[in-house]
Image 1 (tube, each protein chain N blue to C red):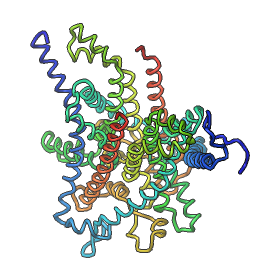
Image 2 (image 1 turned 135 degrees about the vertical axis):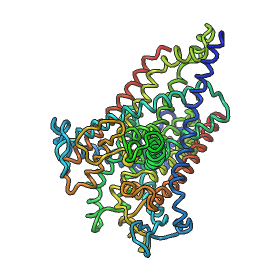
Image 3 (image 1 turned 135 degrees about the horizontal axis):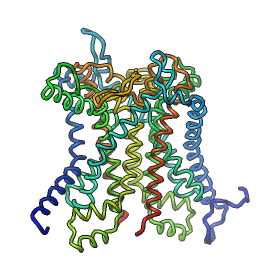
Image 4 (image 1 turned 180 degrees about the vertical axis):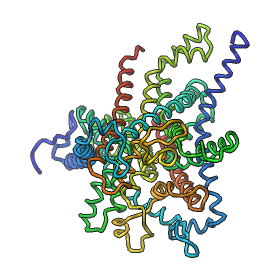
Length: 316
Length: 304
């Protein structure tokens, strides 16, 4: 029963409901509880980033970023893992972008409201919700064993696995499936943001539908499309489970020489060092985690920055 | 369509774009079929009823005692870890969503939203790493255990994987409630909290349900975190819930992730891991479908 003014009171006339009424004390309590709940999320998140930076920052050096790891205790550097992750990011987006953009164009420009669209949307939601380890099993069963195995057996007649083994190509294909929903959703959003008057003007001038999409709609939507690709790449860089059974090598000091080579990857390297290397130093583990987190967050941040700038620069 | 050539090109593009649209459907079906295809031969050597009811998972135990490919210990572990994560993350994430959208002043909201997005973009393996080096020892010391690798540590870390998903989607749902609902409730003399609790939240319920379902899906399907902090060994709860919660558990995802690298292609153990994949796919498919239809219902209501 404190006479202090309740900070949570709504502005405006309170119609005879006094600030010390039960309702207002209930509000103070509820808002306090909500704030406390929020704190319980915020504080550990800040602690998490602090922990990784505090233990990992001293590990970061030119040697760490440019040298291969030592075979015995994984000390030394993480260069092959960085390169492998970059390869995988590029390959993944090259596969996923054409497919995702085509899908988004179909949904926004061609499909209308047919029942098949509802089915496609349900499929996209479910594809986005497939657990990453199931993507990994699919990649192993479909890309590595079925597609790769078939190439080996029927095309190359190889006695030893050439394509029927975990490698960069199948890792990229698997990750492309993982990021496809991200690319479709953000491309679709970008295409929908292009005003229909643009399309009508172009069609009115005699352009065909595809001509309109290619010359008018897609250029106008380009920043949004790129944002989707960047967010997809960010996701691909941090995923572990889909690639650990379709691509990742636990130790490989030389760089991969071809698409059918395995590659070291940053996320898998972190997993490997934490769980398989005997008594790894906390600095080494935190250093790998720090590089991985910094990579993923800077990719995502640039995507979000691009989207913000595009929204502000929009001329319509 | 001036010339036939142009018409052909238009139709070709339409075909390409249509296949892009169908890719999602084809991929979802392919994922299910190929995981199922690799799993089915297991049933020739290990009957379905045994897979569903056996109480042990001992894939390398030699005959005649083994091997055991029981779903139950895996399912129980996934359930226990997910239930703990949901109990922890749903109240906190919903608090964050309500606080951010309804209570926090503008400047605080502008700080909270990026922080939640930041958490969402952290790779799961990094969260698992911090769980393994910081939370496992903490759990071990707090409860005087032999090892901190436990369902509890898994739940704590998974809560942080699920929280951004739940908070973001729930916040969207709360923001989608029209301002007039809040104004009307204030005009009738209700406090802001009364308006939130009795008008805004009920109106946002389908979206909040979807948020929770997707959060549960995220927790059930998360692999790296549980591999790194739960120990990947466990049996059914014969010694009570608290004992189970503070000791190592075996989850569906953890078993697949930890053992998939060790198995030879085509042996029963390999088939059994794919069979676990079929179960996992089915669980998350149901959760996602509920979330999808729940969100659709919310949209229709908002339009009405």
